[in-house]
Image 1 (cartoon, rainbow, N blue to C red):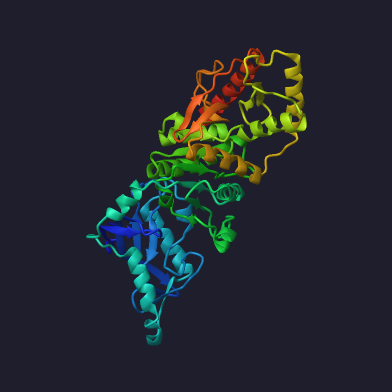
Image 2 (image 1 turned 90 degrees about the vertical axis):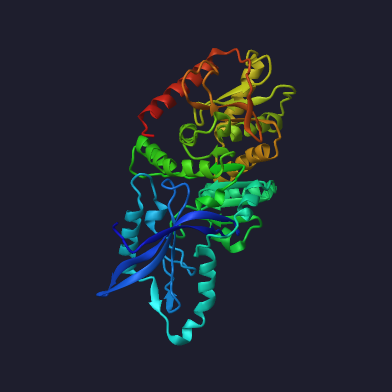
Length: 441
């Protein structure tokens, strides 16, 4: 009604990997005033089936006598990038608002220009490329799409192009555990850390800004964080929740049988938020939790302190940070003084170890390996802790778990006798639950 020149149809969109999907397509012109003259700029809007949670895919549709002015909002193929798209958040983000921002931005920098007759011949190849991607062809057989969905490919997605996202990508690539890895860089322009990855072209790694590129992933790793400088802790967490409110339903929709692995901070709360927003079973929503701490602690005890702990696996459990606790996986618990002293000494050494992006990336690759390859290996990860250690609320804490292709296969019930362990976990659960109650989901 507001833009009556637009027409809509159901047409076939061709993605970069040659897969196809029938999407709602809006085609029309928008009026742009530039230097006192009004130009009608032709555009395509492709509405994803995860709308309104995910933004549309937007293209210019130049005619034969129009050239594309490549700039900060338009690439050489006519793909449109705008802050409104990058910050898309349901329900405040709508198509009409997107078009209005498009008009405002194009008034600052006109995206098309008139070609001279000699240049029009060179325009043919570009228009053919754009037409291949964006022209609706309703009678295309969608068999290729169905075949791709059913094909058993080991594919995972890393969400976030910051230092942690890049670290996870490099670590997973180095282990060679997946056939295909998609890195979703949701940053604006070149603010993310993916440019060098794009330049040097890692094998089997695709960098994309389309959430749909994550479709049919076995594991979706979430590394994004929305951190503010002058905000309270609650405000920072809430801004993360607001971002997840847009991302998680779309990611869950595209990979309905995936395991969601959360590395965003604070990991316990953001894993809970992911579980709530995805509506996935808790076995398929996992936080990275204390996996890195557990691996380090076991290494310190056996290789630094040279202790023999045959038959006694050691775990760090609970909440990430100062409130984490160590336990023995054996029948004895921590009842013997020697065990207590050894554990305390190892924990002191562990506390001086910082968690850098590359080390967390290695830990994430370790978890992905266990899930994708169905290793049934035990890890200390953030899981729904209700019913363990007398925790009675819906909170996520790190507990020893057997991980496989379906996520958490089993939570290991330890026989720890010390009441202090239960008290610390219940205290963590209480503070986490209190903060969760203040969040707006």
